[in-house]
Every structure is written in structure tokens, then in C-alpha cells.
Image 1 (cartoon, one colour):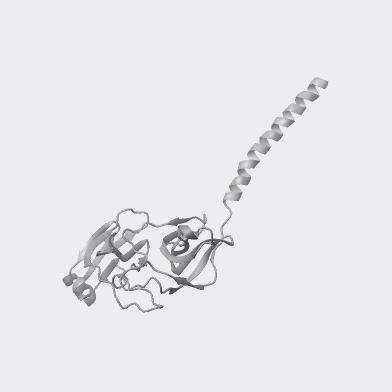
Image 2: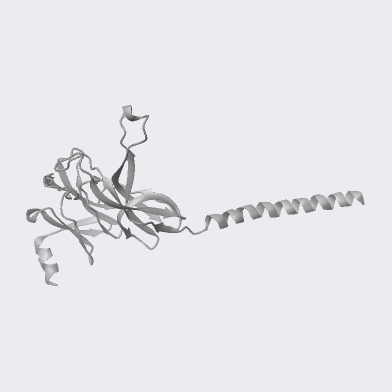
Length: 246
């Protein structure tokens, strides 16, 4: 009889252990499926010192408005400008951050923090994941992005700062959909204190049906591109006139 009781006890132990092992992944699955709360905080005005460049004095701060991006009530990033909804799950927003501007002899003093404009971030409302977006030739001072769906249209600046490109980039694609050399970079030398430096060109203009974007650095450099997935067609002046007449 004692032998039977021991066998029953061992069987019950194995059953209890199996239930425990099954319960662990179920609870883990419930934890991972918990929805995240994505929100923005209040706007705050900060001082921004752009990198020294044409028409920008490095000793005169400009004013930026930034706000925190919160995931589950925790500050994950600081952002500037308005967000753009790509889908009902994903949106993009531009990043702002602080950098330590202290020189080596000043290492014993508290950090000298300075605000800077950054690139663009892709935010997933379901997972709470925030990831940077690669925008070729994007310049944090002179590039102003116009979004349509998952396409970003802007005027990029070459690494040496001497050339301007019309660029259309698509999220999750390394190579740009459009990259057209507009010409030499000629930035305004009349930037006033408290004003944001000029963009390399006018903000590109999007239209739908079909999706197309127009770049215009000046009247002689106006071009319209029709975007069909990864394929691109340059719209001629005759075709533009026909579209306008419809």
C-alpha cells in the first residue's frame, strides 16, 4: 500500500509540473501582447546652436520647440515638428536631442548640454519600438521633408556641402527612389537671429492619382516625378499641361 501511495504522489508531482511548464509560456505571451501607450508631452522652447555654416553665426542661438515622446509614460525621445501617420500602426517624427559640448579641459565641470536637430524616427504604436530612418543626403540644417505615405521628398546636401540633390526616399529602402542633381549649393547669407536657416530648396509638393512630386529650387529647375512603387517617371511639360487641363 505504501508503494502505491508513493507512485500516486510521484504521478501527481509530474502532472503539477507539466501544468506549471504550460502556464509559463502562456503568461509570457499575455505579457508581450500588452498594448503600449504612445503619447507626446508638452511643447518646450529651447535654444539651438546650428553648426557653423553660410549665413549662420555659431554664437547666436535659434529657438526650437521640442516635446517628449513617451512610451508607457516614460520619455524615450525628444521630437520637433508634427508627426506623419504612415499607417494606422506606424508614424514618423523628427528627433531632437542634447549633445555634450564640453571641451576636454572642462571635463571636471558639469556637462555643457546643447540641443540639436536630428533625423527622422519610425514609431510602432503596437510594439512601442522606435527606430531611426535612413534618408540619403539628408541635412539636419538645410533639408525640409515633405511626407506622402511612406515616401519622403526633400532637398539633400552632398557630404562636402557643395551640391544640392532632389531626393525621394522610401522607408526601409537603402537607395533613394529619386536622386537628381539640382546644382551648386547656394544658401542664404541673410539668416536673422531667431530664425531657422533656409531650406536648400522649396518644400516639394505632392499630388495623388497618380502619386507625383514636384521639386522647384527656382523656375528653371522645376521637375515633376511620377512615383509608381519603386519605378519613377519624369513628367514632361506637355504631360503637366495635360494633367492641369483635366
